[in-house]
Length: 156
Image 1 (cartoon, one colour):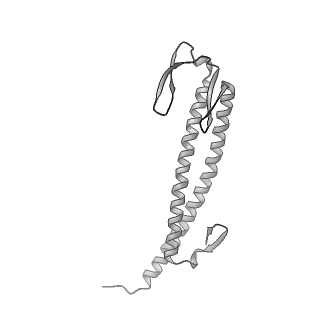
Image 2 (image 1 turned 180 degrees about the horizontal axis):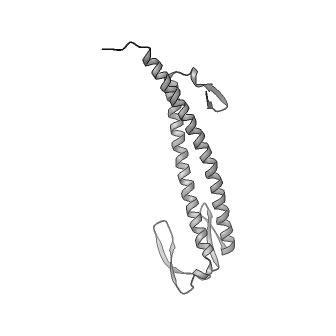
Image 3 (image 1 turned 135 degrees about the vertical axis):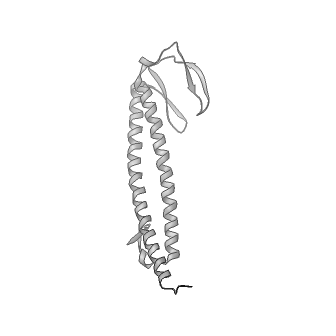
């Protein structure tokens, strides 16, 4: 059995319990961090899917005379009216906005949903591999601790 450390491979059997505990701790932190990243990507993908759904509903669902709520922040909305329901403002990232027609906006959001989906799949594989490595390290550590405990005389 071996654990990856950069490009170098180290046999887990050659590590002592303290070193294995350090490897386990590092893998725990990596899995936790990667799981957080997974959650963030999934949330972002959900937001893009919602934007895509709204844009695909198209101008038929928009009414020039009807007031809408325009989001300024995540929790602050102001009343507004659409001047042209066939054109939308798209947040393209890092605070930049671009005016697009609804078809182009839909294509933009579809591409974002697909890109995030691909990233999520890659991240799932990485998390799965790290989790498998963590289980292997935990098993080797458990065996080492049992072997150390088994060699000592029992107290009455």
